[in-house]
Length: 358
Ligand code: PEP
Ligand code: MN
Image (tube, rainbow, N blue to C red; front, side, top):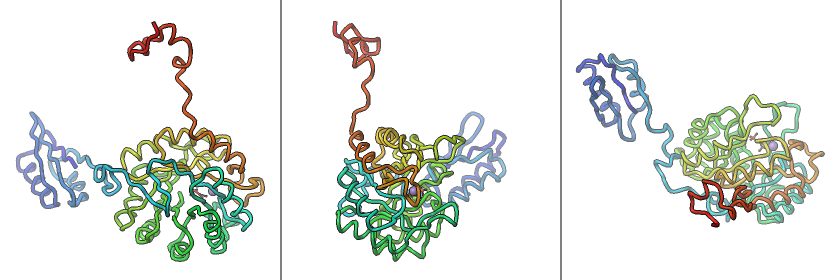
């Protein structure tokens, strides 16, 4: 943190800040300009709030944070990228990991047929909600333990590791008996009791970004998990609330790229909740991968029109299979590269790069 002193600050006021920075557990680094002094509070383990409070001290103009408030999730702390292992699936490694399945587990037939279909199409993990966060209390709330048993059965049959959402600390032990990865839903991103509880499990966690959460708040939520002892965290961008009404949410692609800059944790995209529209899921999946996403989580249902939750945004087996075929497609070529223009001499840009067919 940087403490900027006022032009009129006296020597005594500057010395007082230097002493307070030391008392708060940091080393003070003082720079004296022609008119002002700046005191940097450097080091880890100090009490940041005490430095922040110095804004109220005489002679201080303002206090500006220089380091990010999250530490363990930061790439400054750990420059090497984290790979999260869910059984034999590595998220954050060389391969794009696709997690697919229904919004909610509805029946044995539904989850088993979906598990086989998504596996055949190339998914590496199966998703399925057992406890559903629904906006209305009158909507389907999930099959609970019955759904967990069906997910475990689907894993036995297909070998796909399974993920489900945990909504309450009360359900954690039971859910951990059945599944391989725990999802913290968007609405629970800042449920600090739940974060603390999941920090003490040995299951990897998929942490969805809250619909109104800033990237900093999202990373601080992840910090709860890491600082509580669980290093196996995958961030998930699932769209945020904006003024737009044509899409269910606005999938924040910049957040995917930025989260990977700021943090060493893997990041996956959820284009299903991020757009709410099946037609947008393949292009936004490709876009997310182009932005650096380590994987995708996509809703797939055997018959979306009969789904008990999120049917309108679910892909059919065929649509999912089709999408998977296009994920590895290279981006469209630059127009000039694919035309005879190059043979004719190319644009200035290409000449600069030494591409010329003269
Ligand atoms: C879900 O994955 O079905 C879900 C409810 O997601 P979110 O928490 O992102 O709304
Ligand atoms: Mn859903």
